[in-house]
Length: 265
Image 1 (cartoon, rainbow, N blue to C red):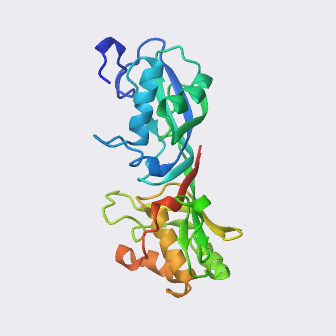
Image 2 (cartoon, one colour):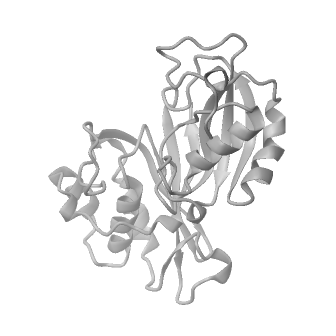
Image 3 (tube, rainbow, N blue to C red):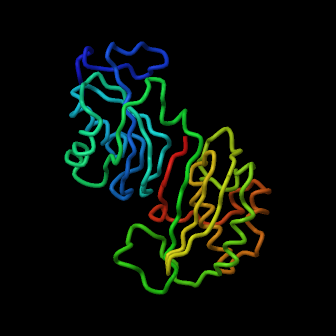
């Protein structure tokens, strides 16, 4: 959407003065990852940020730039992604809860909206994130869970998996557990929690940390499953971390099993 200058807002509120009457709206977003080519806007691609900005521009009647708490890859879901945007419109935050799903028509909803101080920023103010990776551990796939879990046919040693995850929390260099094309200059992160939740055949690996490298949770999940299937020895995950070599870690688990559950502030 191309708008005249008087209907555009500054892209960088840290350096450019916001127009009088500007409001800062914070959103909690839920989306189904297979509907999008990831979070970040990309030319010619349907992304969460791109679709959301177009939707909000329609509602607010001016250009909108959305800042998310973090990026999710194509196929990754979110239950509690956070974002914020500036607007000079008088739209009430609660109206967005109905407007966004109606305009987007599937795959994305704002489940909470509120006006916040102008200095609040979804990314800079975040103090951590919680991710859940779900594995369906049984012989047959589930039509009801298709696109939401990683289906693993071989049985998992859950006691071993629980012990292996318990070795991981701590402040450490996670260079071995990231995408091969990850360019993050700082690979040191504080992994505060790594635990197992079991509900019938669905095994959920929960990770909470100060931040995560590109595909870090998916590589952790893929390596953990290899340990639980007996393909790697107990204690392998900690040893791999210490070697700082991505080629030592296991497969990158499919995106469909990963959910951004919550952003911590």
